[in-house]
Length: 396
Image 1 (cartoon, rainbow, N blue to C red):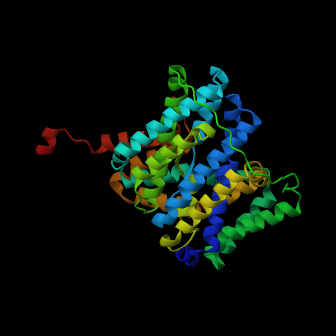
Image 2: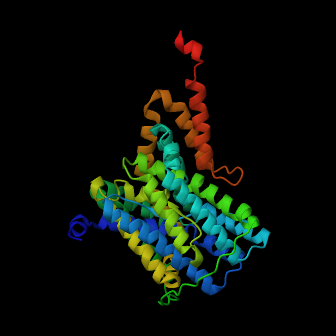
Image 3: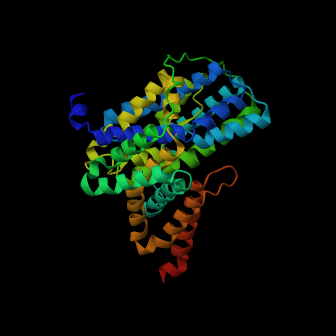
């Protein structure tokens, strides 16, 4: 505890809050849609927020404090999209869905315990991992400037605060951006906090029901998109940020946590990518050994979300959308620049890395799997074509 107090900083705590704000508000509606498509009652939807909040929070907070390195865990946003689509078209109920959550969690745990996923990630060159990171994050940076169309004054004020902050007080540039944006939103009546009511969330247990239909239609797609579209870029962020973390153990932790919390609504927990970049970059703290405070702060806030789900949801969704996307994009500029610098540094990997970046940035989705996976596939194929030599030619 003393070490945490000594390492605490406003910039790191703000990075943790911004990570929650961005991660939560950008996809919470999709989680609600998934729960509704599966026939969840209002009490069960609140229970989902309880389970997901505690799962993300404890899996981020405890390892970060233990390792003193930033560990960021989130819910599976593409997984929620799979559930929303399959639930609406397949007629699955909460019992069958819960059984599918458990099957998915068991598979994630298996890939963590055996180390299969980490072994696969070890084969991806750092240039491709950095390009993947830049491609994932650049879409958020673009959204910050697209927001000029609907909130030109707000975004320009936040951009000015960022530029001045980077010049005069680099450590506090992002807190300054958030403060300026929040002040403007409050002054212009765009911040809606009046209807927030504080009350503890009560978890609701749903007994699982296992079926082959739910396993094939829910569990397997949920597992595939979680590993390919979430855990893969999550590891890329960790590697590109220069951290050495026990990937297999963390994957196992997310699988076990999902197993425990699935009957209460935790459909899939995984490594974070976007919000992890916010807590692992220089904006969180110049000293990389103290950035774990950002992840710990994020985890603590997620725990509070779990305990006071409905109220905290109201607070976070009270921020204007343009404010959220602007602070996210500006907070990620340094990390994007660093990722592109590493990706394009080595001439031998430059074109494959560029292909990885562009495919990832495109947002293309094939077979229900997002662009992060296909970006790595495209880059790896390009690298193979460029560097492969027949055995005879190599011998000569």
